[in-house]
Length: 81
Image 1: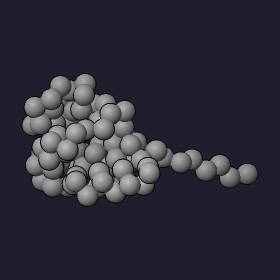
Image 2: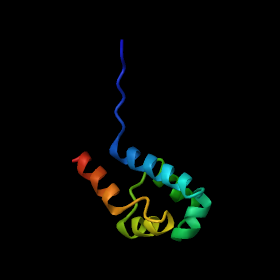
Image 3: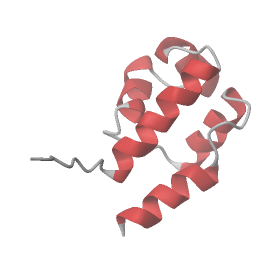
């Protein structure tokens, strides 16, 4: 028997964010400082619990040297619809 798990699009985006944060060498606290938000909010973005507003996604782009982009976010939002 094979079990298939589906990842919710918000969680998928959060996993991408976590991966790119790791590639950029940033933890939640460092990312929070770079985007001007609280560490706990960054953690919620990363876990896919909260969708960051576009202004924050732009800051995340800058903080990860554009590894996470508006396109990544919008593709996942489109998949959810």
